Amino acid sequence: MSWMYSDEEYWKQLKREQKEIKASLKYWEKLEKQLLKQLWVPVWDKQGQAFIEPKKHAAWRRAVKWNARPLNTNGQYIKDALEVMRQTEANGYEAGIKTLKYVDVNMFGILDIVDKFYHHGHEFSDKFVRSNPDLLKEYPKLSKYLDVKDPEMTHEEMARSNEALHEAIEFTIATRDSIKLSDVETSKVNNEISELQAVKEVRKVNKTSTKR
Image 1: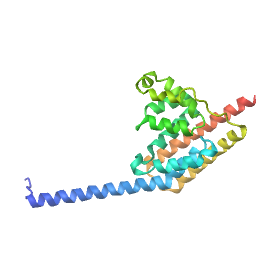
Image 2 (image 1 turned 60 degrees about the vertical axis):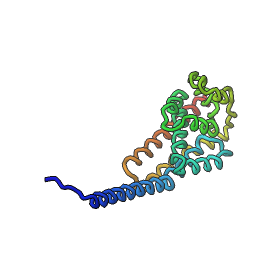
Image 3 (image 1 turned 120 degrees about the vertical axis):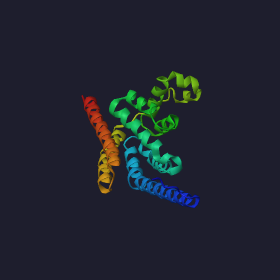
Image 4 (image 1 turned 90 degrees about the horizontal axis):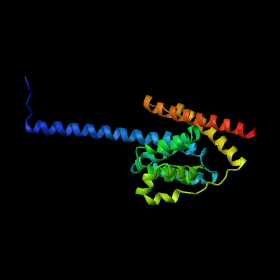
């Protein structure tokens, strides 16, 4: 036997469903804001210090906070920019370029962040543009990334960068353990920790090779 709603009952039911949907959206928005504030913003801020010059740390912190605002894709640009940096150092420029080509948001915005902050940013940008001649043809303004050199890092700067990398790994682990996270979020954090540890191993190998 099927039940038929009256017009009044139908609209009451519709309003109840809309209210439930709004309440659910509000809950998830609140949860996302909490995760950004308690987890991702401090973690991304700390991780960035392992890949950028100390004099740019304050600007990086401002960029992380600005990009984490809901109107600015909840930090997706920063998240992807760091992914490009980690992949580049752990697996080489080709891996970083591949990562950038498959991002979910505007790749040019992410390229600009990497170019501006990453201590190998200019070299990465140059290689990215040269490996995508069709993009350069379609967007001639990308030529601004060609033939720009990164300042050479001193031994002291490299040592500080390695120290910051170690601190970033420890901080990310501690922050993960201090917050109750879903399995999905925990997996995301663990993936970033694994990539940071891979970077650490590569830097260790490069340091040993340089000494020889």
